[in-house]
Image (cartoon, rainbow, N blue to C red):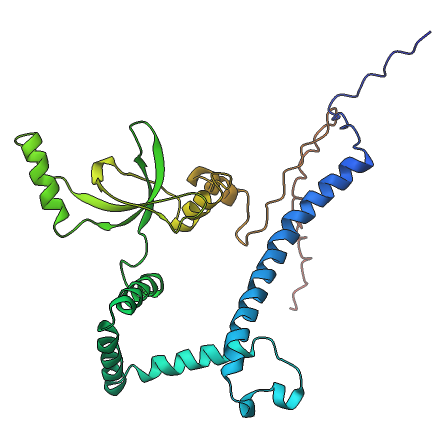
Length: 288
């Protein structure tokens, strides 16, 4: 006679089926790959950059100042150190009046060359745009715009408020198409491409057609580079995560519920302090 399955006790969770050795190995491999792959790729790119700089800078260093002359071994990163020191010295020298005059003379000499002039000015503008830390050099916020048609939204970055010739021209066109149309403020928006956000489109959009996002510019850039796979948490999720953590960032201990069928212990009452009764003192005989 077949035995009936033993009923599980109330309140006890059913055990998950045990995974096989290959399933556990696959899960461990994928977990390790998530940690090892970014570290390995980062080290590889750093080492490639250092080697690239050393191969082009070290041969220009005189043998007297090259450590290979005395040690007989190339020191990785020596060319990068020389490049950093040389660039810092040049930057310090161009801060004074004499250095600025030399830079202006060199730029005037470069402007006389037809092809070199275009390459130099283009590279200079790109480097100044990337490295300048002044106000307005970086994106203000992430946003959504309808592109390339209505009801299709694209992630973009607000660069700045549109100024110059463009807003008056757009207002004149709107008044021509719709008489009595009021001027609308516009913003300059950069629409990046995926997965390479360094290329994209510059759009001039009315402010009312821009939907501002709560995520930061860095989080929006990760969303673009990952093609939508890395989604930043919402403000509600951040608040819920902060509520689950203590003031020092550690997770709060979960409240342990009493087991089923067990009575809760009554809270201990504070013992009342015993009152000490004072005894009457005996009458002392009086001396007559």
